[in-house]
Length: 222
Image (cartoon, rainbow, N blue to C red):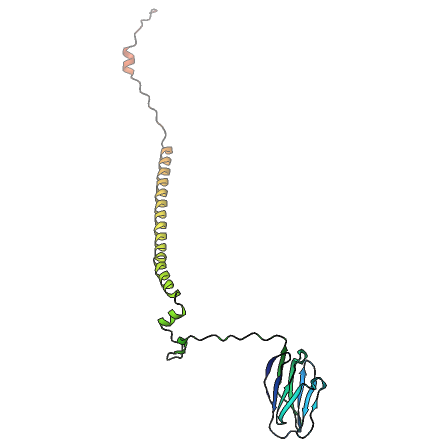
């Protein structure tokens, strides 16, 4: 087994990085290989022998320690040095380490902002949850809490009165419509009754009066 650190690192162009390869047991030697995006032997180190260095890294590489725990330093990094680097231990077989991702950039990475923890969050209840008393809530939201309370108190009568007003309004509308319907029905019934009745004309003649005023003319031919 081969241990390798760090697993990833970011460095500015011109800076340096350190990669450590460690393994127990007896070794014949150890490589640091660049395995991505291209393959190359950065350095081969063996105790008691002169290390072999890739020409690309000549004058930009240093090492310290033994082959069982070797730290390799890469200096004057260039953008082309970005890639994956793997420690390979040479025993009876080749043992590969987990690898190190080196990112070389020409601009510094953005700062990482760590959020500040409010002191009230350091107090935990019996279940391990943050305990926030009213005073702490006011310190979080000094202005919002009174406004929120007043808003709730003001909105409560409005929410209660609106349904009541709607119910009363619908009741009055229904009552008015019912009265109009009854009135229209009554008028229709009167009209129907008036059509069913036929007009009766009575002619009365006072026959006794006409007889008294009629003169009797004698028949001259009698």
